[in-house]
Figure (cartoon, rainbow, N blue to C red):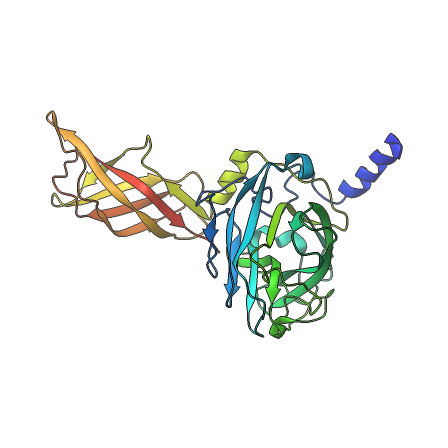
Length: 356
């Protein structure tokens, strides 16, 4: 293809869409891992390792998720999500399911114009590597109002080899997405689902289908692995090159949904309450959280007064909290000898979970 032809093709691709902010997936290059990078057992409906990707499983099998590196030459991405089967399930019951997915905030999807005659097509692209060859499936679920599901098949041609896939998703005119901070669409990769969830690929439906009967069983051996990286979901009918965002940009996007505060190099002065055992501290946030968070982790206290060191104290417990767009206000109890002049609270891997 000549250079003029390439430019003409690029012009056709981008004439109806933006050059930046094309990717509706957050952390599609698997850069951000705030929770863990080592192999962690997947838990049903839980975020366990890589940011923004949720595991979803029920059955006799089990798998772990972890960070895998060294894939730059093959995929253009050094980091990938690796799934390893740790307990095989060779006989999938009708209601069993094993998958992982990303939930996308509804107000980030308004450009799709779902529920109108102007609804837009999308295209999903990604790099995948799996032990099992043959038919695999992905699904999308549109959650607002009436739930609609879309399933499509793709093929793994060679075992344990990186392959690039693109999947077209038709426009949905029948039902819209509310413009709010709730759940808009889920995008998922199937490891194996039971027959209860089998259906026909290629079109939106209100039936509860997430796969097809053709799909292979990625859960049938503890030798099986499944890797994913370079995930991009965008408006249009042609997959464009992956939108490489900076690590800082991707991290801040992730922190809207999950934020961790560690004690390393961070000290927060307290405001003494009406006695010496209750303290209030303000923790600034780098970005607004999507919603009031669920708190995890703990707080520590240290400080000095009149030259005397308090040292480490009994770990304070969080009594309650308040959240707005910019900070968390924590009311901690169990902290002895609090003084407004000297005491500081230290977050000890304090987590703030505002996931969808």
